[in-house]
Image (cartoon, rainbow, N blue to C red):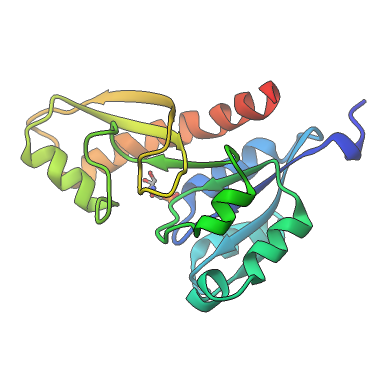
Length: 195
Ligand code: GRF
């Protein structure tokens, strides 16, 4: 039996809907070896906070000042001692002090095949619009470590989907979300199980 002591802890950062965060919480909800211990959002009205409370996962929101000009979030994280920080649709940049405090322990999911369609401003519909405008034949998702540059940390896994001329932003969003919901939690599971 796994003791509570050896439970690996995940903290999720999310800015909005949190459909990925919800999938991850559901995936690990019956597990005793890996637990989502906290959900943090920069948006106090984000649906992800409702999802966390439905799943009985503690959650909180924070301001820019909390993140960038105080050690409130860093202090909280140090107290929790997470094995992995998961950015699931988190739109702000993680400050250097947090990256330094959790080396190789922060992962992000990006809705395209990096290194294409990444970097500042490349999020949400902006990514899919650019993919469609360039008439790409495929797109997908990239799960990667977070470093100090947007979307440039080492790739952990990529999964692809076809893009056809019939696709529009909405249909591409659906395809990408399907991939994200299918793979993100499993990749996290593998990462933590390998540690
Ligand atoms: C996902 O498409 C993810 O790739 C991107 O932000 C989106 C978040 O969606 N980083 P949701 O809030 O998990 O539904």
